[in-house]
Length: 140
Image 1 (tube, rainbow, N blue to C red):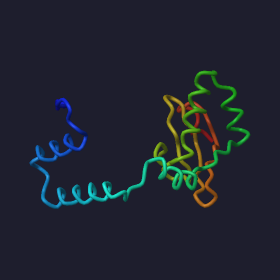
Image 2: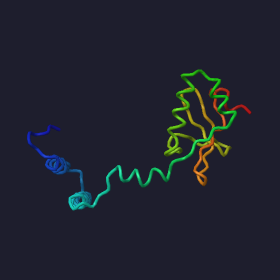
Image 3: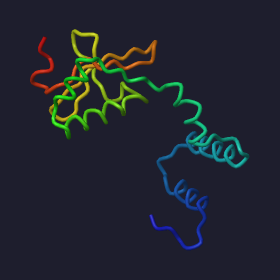
Image 4: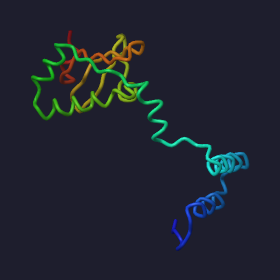
């Protein structure tokens, strides 16, 4: 869509809404209501929302001694990728992991490598239990 010269943001939004014939009346009414609320100052910025919700949901990542040893024994570039991916879990761990069938644990895929972990929602912790190549990490 081309932005016309001297067209304000509000005019662009209005033009987009008018051009979308697939919007039903209810949706248009909700958009208009939200727009009026924003104009009257009834809104929350993204930064304000982050300050309220994110600190409450940060999980603490705890490595077992054996998992830390396994990570240390890997190639440095692979270990760095695994470490960075694990650290990305602290906001929303279930976004990146899958539940293991027949076990209470979860797995995290990083290329050919896997991290076996447990998520303790009550204590807001992620326990890293095992790290290794996908072909060997599931062995007992």
